[in-house]
Length: 220
Image 1: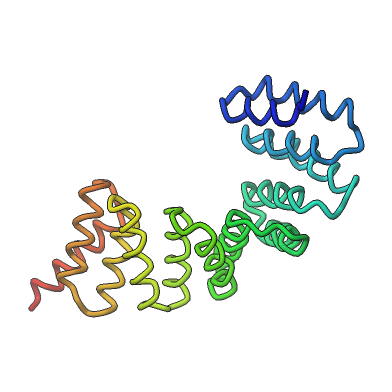
Image 2: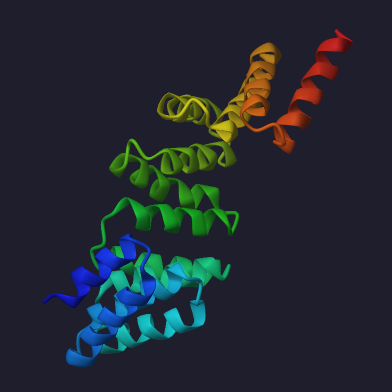
């Protein structure tokens, strides 16, 4: 019986207790295999036990420092603890060691964004967006990085793309409104701020944007 596969199935079903038992069994029977520690670490990250999770990923890397998923897991722990430069290092190591998945590029990009380095984040978020073209969150984060890097026209097109995937995305409407303001098209901006507020009435930024545009239009 494959304890790891069975444990992952339990995790999917949100049965963390049974999953933990099976990962633990795998570790007992295969103490030199980093895979058991990585999966237990992922489970602990999922239930927000970050310090314990970190120990499991570090143990996996002690056994084999060239396991990209252990670096990725450790990166996630650092990210959740807002240690973004440490997270950046781990995600970079995961990519160097051959992890070529949208999630690792997304997390590396977001770690750099949180360090206010949008230009460095851009290629990673672009890569994530290429790998997962239907993933709304990834496409939106890529749009944000374009906006922060002052690539307004590209950001504008990207937020439109997000709304094609999910027309109820209030933050995409808000950011599209901001892009329209840059283009000096206040009426279009107002439409999108209103859309954002219709979807999410407590959207503070959209409320502020709407008031700003209305004041501006009333002056003319």
